[in-house]
Image (cartoon, rainbow, N blue to C red; front, top):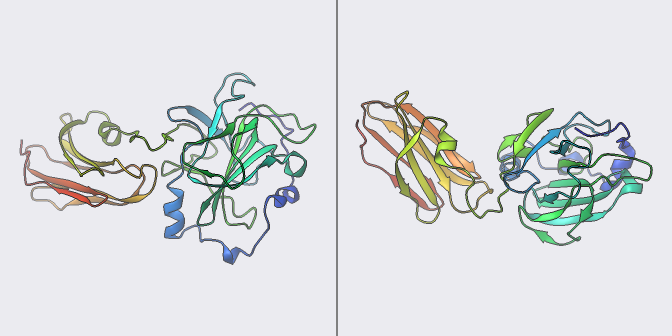
Length: 302
């Protein structure tokens, strides 16, 4: 991380971002609604970029905030695009330096009590009241703050649920997986919903090859893979619609003579992997995405 000890933000100052309301008015973090919303978030950077997040490199941090960098020199990230982690409505787009040292700040309301914060931006490219889509550029990485607070360029990112600061700060979830606090390097899957960024081999892992597939209308495809090294089959259903949004998706694998294994739930990109040992045994396999379902006969017996 390329941060300095000057990144100190007072608790009282941060309160000024929003009005505090009773905690009872906030969505419950463990609720089904909150869990589904949380899986929608992607990295706040363009698809395919790798960034290192650090939650402990600044004394300004209250709990689960993350500072992101990817360059090897202090100014390497200056001007890099910052994109919306999920779709929503811009509720703050202003320079907050004299208020809370966030500098150029964009806050996006995602509904259900969730909001994301993007601080220290060099530039802002959205305005209050504007609707933004997941992956849309909202600004660029910068080092804006309060006068005299000299910091290196980085993105300060927060997820909040409700208004009861600081307990409303949530652990960040990217692509359905909680960030590996305190530090982790991740590759962005924020691909704008144009195509599924995953392949069946990525889901099932090294050594697996696709041996069959079935289209689920226009909603996705279910794949059957086999690993000749260990004799395991793997099934995954990859979505083709509502990418990045948690919707009902499932995949299953049933080896002849054994109980069916199923992965079913609300997922952003895929269901699975469902893995079982099936060397020299017949299998049934299938899955569902959207309104389309596929169920195979008993097959692939060798």
